Amino acid sequence: MNKLIFRKFSLDILNFFLIASFSITFIVWIIQAVNFLDLVSDDGHSLKVYFYYVSLNFPKIFSKTIVFVFFISIFYVINKYSNSNELIVFWNNGIKKIYFINFILKLSILFLVLQLVLNLFVVPKSQNLARLFLKESNIDFLPKLISEKKFINVVKNLTIFVEEFRKDGVLNKIYINEKIDQNNSKIIVADSGKIIKKDNQFYLRLYNGGITNLNQTNSFALNFSETDYDLSNFSTKSITHPKMQEIKSSIILNCFKEFLLNLNIKNQRSFAISANQTCHNRDLKSISDEIYKRLILPFYTLIISLIAASLIVEPKSKYFIKFHKLNIFLIGSFTIILSQISLKFLLTSVSTVYIILLLPVILILIYYLILLLLTKFKLNFL
Image 1 (cartoon, rainbow, N blue to C red):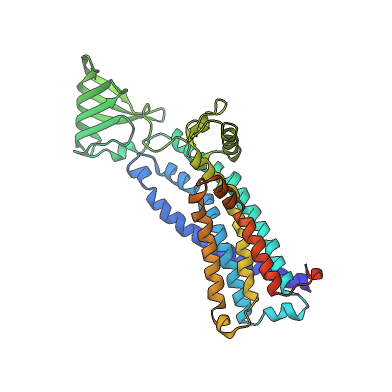
Image 2: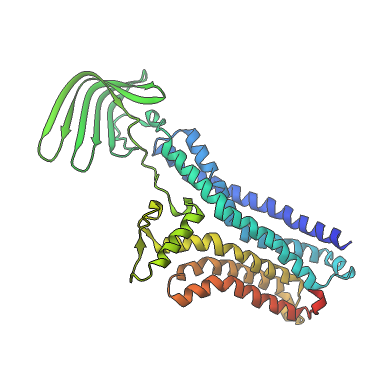
């Protein structure tokens, strides 16, 4: 009988969690997708690239909502059971409060494992795939971004200006400025031209113009009657260098390990790994912050579950019982905020590092001990 009661209770939590988490994730995803529209409007990518890129951000958003939504799920379901007097079913079947709390703690371990899998493997992989797809994609939306009397610079080292863009696709009075390197550049002027596509690559076919190569010492000019200007040689202005959140967890841990082996270098803030160029000149704080987000932050799921479970332990004072639910909600919210702001003090000192890393475990032990005392437990209940 007890198994059936707890099965229904856990299913209620799971159902609410799935509905709430996917609803919040979808709303945040929509807002973020709107913010990423500049991949099309400013960076010249196609709608296919855009939708693929924003879709791969879904796991990242979902992983960030787990702790908060899990707390809300437990809080909501217990509050619902309390208001409908369904908690009496647990007590009438001989289920002790501490056993009830232990069940929620065990359930939270499953969500802890889920979050660790997402943070350590799924999210970095999806973020890296999104960046690689963006890096390898063609700027195939560029032709639609070219407009009359407007400088277009959606790709690196290239600026295009068109005086007139006719409805038949013909461009008149074309100006192109290409920066080859820091000291060399190329200017192309043409009377007319049009955009063509060959082998899935875009070209500007130019007529009656000239090419001027410029450097610090001299210049060289060449006239032409017709030439094709390859647009596929240029990369997008979107960031294609891997961010910290896109790097494999094993690589980040190796980077941090490598730093620890070089602690004899005083005031070292960045370091290079000869065997792994991914960590070259990475800032120590960015690496430690990412390790904290992936590995330490999920453990706050356990303390959050205990705080929500403490709803069943009502205070004896009538004054406190009036604000019991509000207090529990505020304590849970404060703990979630604490998990985020403690990141800013991670590298303040050596002692602070140990405190912040062990803080979730310390909070779990202290809060669980308080619950043991409040529920007047006996060892055979555990």
